Amino acid sequence: MTDERFAAPVVSVVGKSKSGRTTLLEGLISTLIDHGWRVATIKNHAHDTDIDVPGKDTWRHERAGAVVTMISAPNRYGVIRKVDKARTLEELAAEAGDVDIVLTEGFGIEADTRIEVVRAERSTEPRFAAEELFALATDVPELAEWPLPVFALDETVELAELIEERFLR
Image 1 (cartoon, one colour):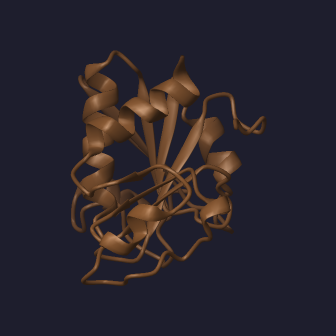
Image 2 (spheres, one colour):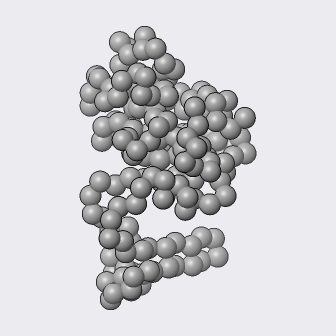
């Protein structure tokens, strides 16, 4: 199942805070890059936050009133843009540019392709129903029987290979 709203497949990792979403994403990113794919990531943050280092030049530029602040270095560049509303997943994915896949952390409601992370110390029940998920990563033994691909929390290589098979080949 691919979502026609996006130029590249978008796969969202969802789950409760401190469930291991970021760790799972790190493994997926590393594996997909090792396999030759160009990966973009988007992190959904539910609250207002600073994304620049307080006191540094770009932080000072923004605080002085710049609507767009950019930083450029030989190995990367960044753009900080003041906005009047949160951007949709569709808008953000379009900004990713020329990539093979977009992995997100969050966007549970907007995403059509979701991998939910369920860690026993945070919860034993997924937030989404099985038919709303692409896969499940968990350490809860009772969830191993769910009617969808279920992975251990550390099976990022196997999960990345399923993503490749379904969306990249």
